[in-house]
Length: 254
Image (cartoon, rainbow, N blue to C red; front, side, top):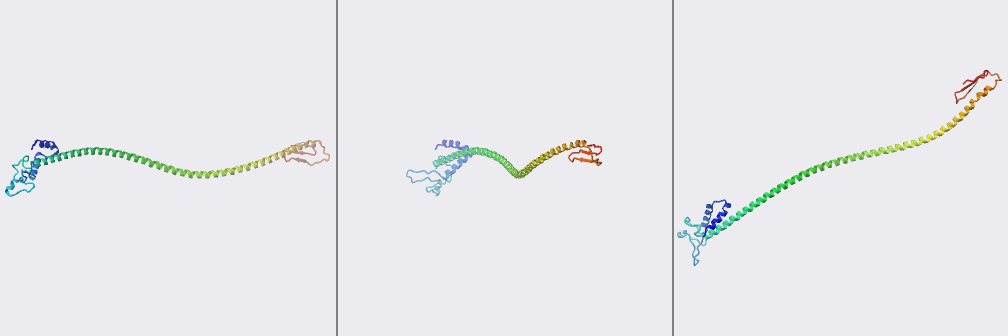
């Protein structure tokens, strides 16, 4: 069996195995001891026997354990083909494991990218939460202001009810004052009428006064035949003028 192909496969997968080549060869040697190659004869009746068969130990259609394996070449001795098959399968599994590790590395890179994206998303969520808290604070402040304005509105309505009551009282007082003014107007009309009548009476008294003022001139022209010694006085109530007539002297004083 050629060894170069196996060596190349070993060289290809050696960096990804993480083990030494001597360890691989020791593992393959153990596999060769447990599963040696069977030599089929022409008649198909003989089976490959181990050196232990000379001592009485024989294998019956199964693997043969070798007592002395120091002089057996694992690449050319019994079971070499089966060993090559196992090695090929082993290297295929190793390559598959290497590809799996590459896939795991790729997945780790993708997971790292996803974690970075998640970190960015968490940061954005944090910013949104901060903005939401700020808006919630503004909303609570606006709610407090609305409640304050509502209480102020209630107080204003309460004050307005008092103002309306005061306005009704003022209207009633205005009506009372208007009635009083109307009564005063009617009284003033009556007083004007009284003043007019008094003025007429005053005019009449002035006319009588004029007549009384002309009376002393008549007395001065009269003689006193009766020789009256007593004093005759004529007093006008409306005017302060007092006329005194002396019987002897016929004198008038004002």
